[in-house]
Image (cartoon, rainbow, N blue to C red; front, side, top):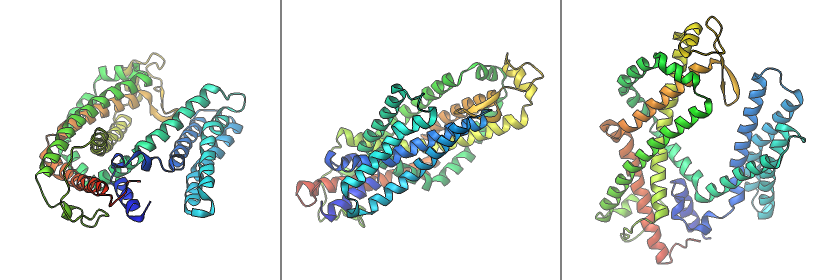
Length: 387
């Protein structure tokens, strides 16, 4: 692969458009690229289990040592893999692939051994972790990491727009505060299991994503129609690896490319919605702890296992015990997610949000799509090989 093709491939990956590239390009060093992500997932799982044990009462010292060591190993592993990658020809492709395979084996086999010990190791658990590892490899092939990194960088760069919109959402906040102090809502939250709560959150999130996809598809279609009748692509691509002498043809996007383009816009907007919802969650948890006494929490929630006059049931977060009543956690999560859904819908018609966030996103996407058209034109003329 020549230097020009390598630069072009890296340019598309940095801009979150991996599906413009061919399958062969996306398949290169797939195991090596997937191993750091798998190691990170394993480190989070080990650290969560370790924190759950430490806050749960009487932990097993041997299990704590095993989980602690596994957490350290999995945290260090991505840096070791990076050193192996930078070693270049010293290790060779086989050495780097072997190092990545060892990391994946640590996740699939050593992690459950650290969690449950040799007697607790089951084929079902190993199979489940193997499935997670295979899913990460497949998502890496699809370029999900490139999409997420670009979307996060863009959303973070536009973080100021979120602060402006949160100030404009004060009427919504006042309304949700009134809803928050409703006894029936607390009773529902107290009787809702954590599994049912996550199912409810997933259902509301799916509605928000469907709404974003429907809105953004129209934006992408309008952008392509505008580009088909415009010139000046060479100016858009100034400073990029894609230098052209003539205007490229604006060809229709393939189905994978359409999915890719919509995905980066949806993920960018979804990240801002998550920031907004997380901020509201912290606010409502703090409000519940400060404003609602323990006896009122028990009275409103009607918790049978926690009679009036007794402290409310302690809360948990991914198995980690937290010094916050469980009902406060559930009620705050429910109200915050409902507010996030309203925020998602309202931003689509808010002119300030479009000016501060959506218009820069469209402008950035216009450069990426112009690069895609130029790339296909160069590839057809064999000036920029795709493999």
